Amino acid sequence: MMQSNAMNWIDFVDGMKIALYECGQVALKLKGKVTTQRKKQDSQHQTSLELTDVDLLSQEIILLRAYSLVPSLEIYSEEIEECPKAVFSLFSKNKNRYVLIIDPLDGTKCYLAGGKAYAHMVGILDQETEKMECSLIYFPEKRELYSAVKGEGSWVQKCFYTKPEPIKPKNPPKTFGIVKRTKEKNCEIFQKHRFQLVKLNEENSSCASYQIQIAKGELGIVGMRHFHGHDTAIPGLIVQELGGAVVDAEGKSVKYDKTMARISLVISSLRKDYARILCKE
Image 1: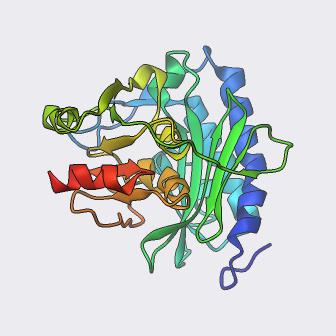
Image 2 (image 1 turned 60 degrees about the vertical axis):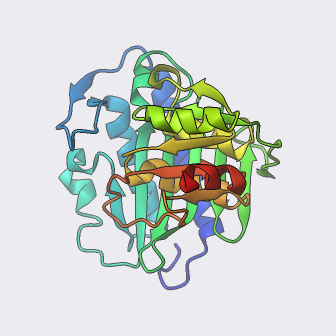
């Protein structure tokens, strides 16, 4: 068990991998058979209201594993209001610099539509720096696990039992990813600069997959409007550890708090000059 005053986030990442694998097994087993309920809309920007059994089961798996590693953490999860009281009570009195950030099922529409780009995401937020300390993203359909530790690098495991390897991105193409709430003006800006527009649909994609395409150099840039903090915070660290930019409309590095509130615009690219184009205009 790690102590909260001497965190080793590489050990934490290694310790959490089994939990994400278990979440993936649940998702694969229940795919096409899962029951859903509708959650309360948190703002006018929320378009996906489906809550699945996979969200709830994955949340519990992650919380219980994190408790076994660092029981003193504060916690945030996209579905924390649905957490069983017995599990929530394990963390409810904690006051800690570090916060466990969970998106138990990123890409719910993709998952329910039978797509393959959904993922399970976990990270640690440092409330003093307002930056992420580590991140994990697991794509069950590909059995690919991406991770990052601040100041240490970003890695990928192509199979759960293989050793992690440093991510080696391609040179990013001159492409702009169109996601929900992308403004026509943004598209016009990039067309003017001769970027190819690429439409990324919710039914076959996810926030995690957008950002991993950025990290791998498969997509040039994406601008995400009014997404929750966890949608960009967790994968954003992977991009940043590769030397990329995760910035707001003013070009400043994005900061987060434990509420993971929606952010008006987050721009992600491995090419900082691509990000500057959108910031400038």
